[in-house]
Length: 78
Picture 1 (tube, rainbow, N blue to C red):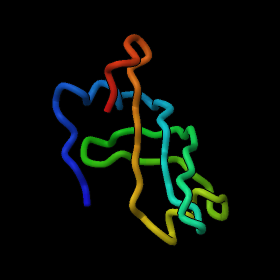
Picture 2 (tube, helix red, strand yellow):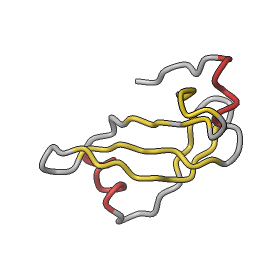
Picture 3 (spheres, rainbow, N blue to C red):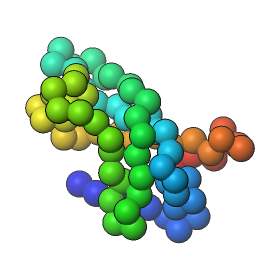
């Protein structure tokens, strides 16, 4: 499932920027990891390496949450 990024929040993904990527561990616990990402105009692209825990979590369950905070205003987020 993909969600459209509101025009008002696209600036938060211009960069590359560090976001919080939340995946699910094999035991069902959430794992939040700071990762580099960028927005290519259609998709949020996450930087990861094959074999790392977040890669394994994504392979097992591709449903994730990405949290991008505005460094100038922490109450502005996507």
